[in-house]
Image 1: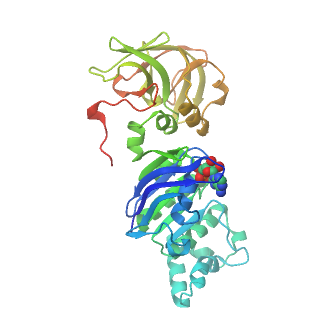
Image 2: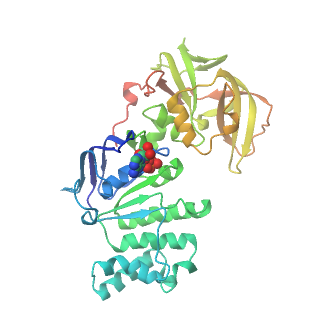
Image 3: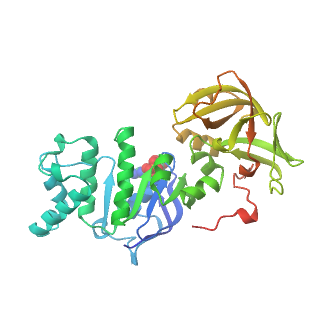
Length: 385
Ligand code: ADP
């Protein structure tokens, strides 16, 4: 399977800001690449540029060795799956699956064979003679996938294909999609605004903001080593806790809070300090605060603690958090900072409790106050995956 090479690609629409700006990205042979970012960040536009539905303003796109930048979409040999898959309501599942092949004048026996194969892969064998109206949402979505698969394209492009399904079905379709990709090994570019979907599906994930690529790496690296404040705030649920802090005498100070740094820490001066909710514990010393919200999820408990430090406000943060559906909007008006921690299911904690949060010094993140870029010790800089 060939990969997809995106070289310095931009797209400007008339009367608008650039939708995609100078993006370079390599989708490797057989890779499952996810494009993620808030609404309007240019994900769909980038996908349409790869498909050839939109024309690039600058840059080149290659599929395998072929430069397809100016090639007709039909000649690119890729299949798209959209959120709004339109099946033909009057045709059976079998006819829907075979429709594209019939248009391409494929021999009847070949169509039957390929449709049977794909129906087997997708577990649609029992439904081949039904009409789309007699299927559930998930089954219809599988037929839509099937239509793309029977064509045996060089690559799949998927634009939020699961977003019309209810939450439970989405999770199950996500797992099926992963297995399908393992089995078929077709290069796939998948667009979603949902960072959890991105992190569970993507072998690598490309994060976009305002048409600009922020970082492209494995889910682990995005989580452990976000390149900047935007990625840090966007990736991870609950989101990373962030405050403005002064580094002095081996500790980070914000408001009345004091957090010791790891020995030999590279952090200096005024910075944005970040702590993941999983790296905070209810302890006996560290960051004092008052519990504002307790969310018991069964497997774990999320605790939101108001701390004595001012809330951080930057554009990157506002944008990233705006895009995160799980953010607690109710607290957004307050000027105090809030730290969320994830703790055990049966933690004895209640709203109004005075608590101390203990921070793991080895798990602190630092960002430049002006640029938002991650501050990294030289040894910490990840080798690109
Ligand atoms: P996303 O898929 O990340 O939500 P899009 O790629 O759809 O974002 O859009 C990126 C930007 O380009 C947005 O600002 C959007 O308004 C603009 N845009 C998208 N399509 C068009 C179009 N056909 N004409 C003008 N502007 C467009």
